[in-house]
Amino acid sequence: MNTIFNLRFVQILLAGLFASLLIACSQEAIKFNNVDITGSKAFGKDFSLIDHHGKQRQLGDFKDKVVVMFFGYTQCPDVCPTTLTEMQGVMTLLGADADRVQVLFVSVDPDRDTQQLLSEYVPSFDSRFLGLRPASPADLEKVTKDFKVFYNKVPGKSPTSYTIDHTAGSYVFDTKGTLRLFLKHQQGAKPIAEDLAKLLK
View 1 (cartoon, rainbow, N blue to C red):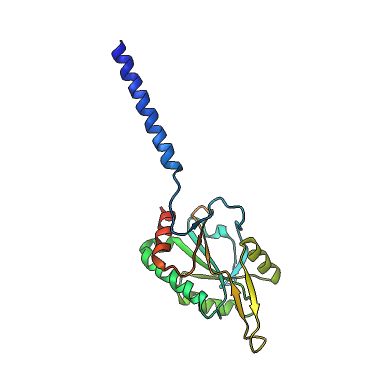
View 2: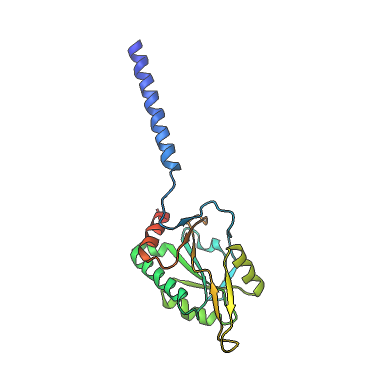
């Protein structure tokens, strides 16, 4: 009787330990190369912008995809083309999984970044990339405020030759539409691809 009781006790103990291990594993945070902002309430959770095809877009349009969202402008001399080239490299590294990633380039210069210009510029890096623009100054103010994006117009030699200083990092949403990462600028494609691959699992 004692032998049966002891055996049953050991089985219960082992089952409890196994359950505890499963809980611990499920609660273990994923380690990313970039800044983990999961659960942060400081940043935007959605947006409403016009894509370079003229269609209104929200985050829900990209269900089941990892979304990388970057703010910039087409006449940017360095940060923007560098970021888009970097993301081009990320897509290459991801292989077939790249079809489950949506890169969004959000213009902070809608006065010059027309739908036509965005449709030529953004897909030139990768045909799957999508350019977005706010429909009004109020929409630009809202989306940049929601995502804590800094931008400032710097006058040039003529009224149309200005440049814009702006936030250089990118935001990443997981396949459930939850904001997860802030990507650091100019780190190379490999660490970004590694992080996106983890979110795609």
